[in-house]
Length: 249
Ligand SMILES: NC(=O)c1ccc[n+]([C@@H]2O[C@H](COP(=O)([O-])OP(=O)(O)OC[C@H]3O[C@@H](n4cnc5c(N)ncnc54)[C@H](O)[C@@H]3O)[C@@H](O)[C@H]2O)c1
Image (cartoon, rainbow, N blue to C red):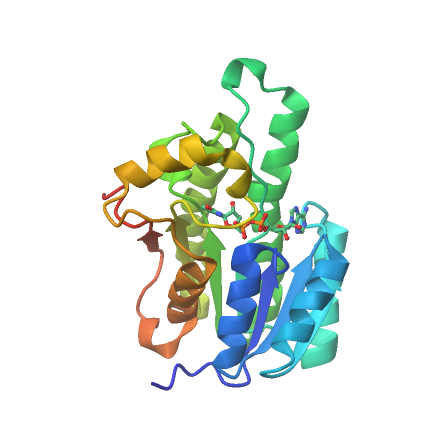
């Protein structure tokens, strides 16, 4: 199947993380040129080296909470590849702190990465994509943003609900400029983010999951590749749940 992604430039924030790395590898297998952007530059460079087996890749350091840093990331990407065709907003952090113990500082930190970061990167992407009247933005939200926090903290869930609604606003604004915008809602995926949860909590989640297993980063990545592909060109303002059936809406 020709996904139309050959030679496309795909910028992935949080590209050094579990899902980001899987996205980088999946897109490069489709022939895309990949920008692996992350706060953790050595880890981003390691992913870029892995991707290099399939095709071109560039590692960049970014702090998605900073407009200047995001601008520099887009300058770096366009300086190397001339354009950005696909943005995957994957940078994120997770908290499990109960509401009555959650500090304002922790709330602000998480919101600034998960929600402000998604806004800043999307806004910068529009500047590059609008003049070309094409582009694709995929936001990684979460099941937590649909059902509220239980394992996930209230701040995490609220940030991801924000990402989901931001996705719809962005889709309404950017659609007339030929830019596709969608989101995915992963459930419990086996990455560094969920490993600290401990076996008891994971076992509870597994018992509630009809498929009786955690998802893999690759299973999220290929849905994101699909959303960026020509086969999904009329999917817009949508979200796809990737959760083994633990939540069905
Ligand atoms: N793992 C899951 O079960 C799960 C479920 C739902 C949603 N998600 C979402 O998927 C995305 C990727 O998560 P993951 O599981 O791969 O986690 P991860 O911790 O493996 O990766 C997250 C990456 O984001 C980077 N990052 C953090 N702050 C940053 C900043 N300020 N600027 C740039 N990069 C920054 C980290 O360095 C890390 O590489 C996140 O948005 C997460 O909320 C994950």
